[in-house]
Image (cartoon, rainbow, N blue to C red; front, side):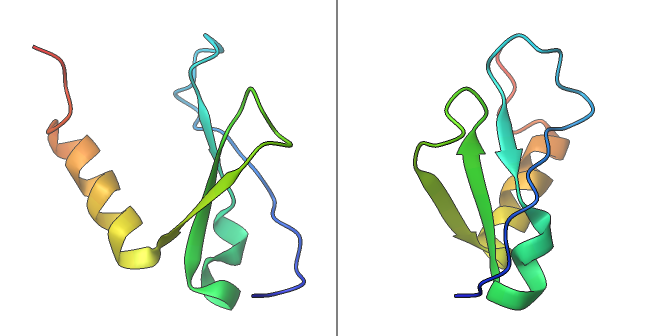
Length: 69
């Protein structure tokens, strides 16, 4: 992994309802992963997704694959 610190951000679509995730995209190039964490627990665990996995997830969200009926 890298010694670079993650720079966390929430989506601009976040409505501050508390159900948000944060992403540290600055580590993608140096580490090859996209770190994700729960915004309510900034000191809690982090999930590190491979770039291809995270990209597929974002594409699915944009395509509406996870929308509720």
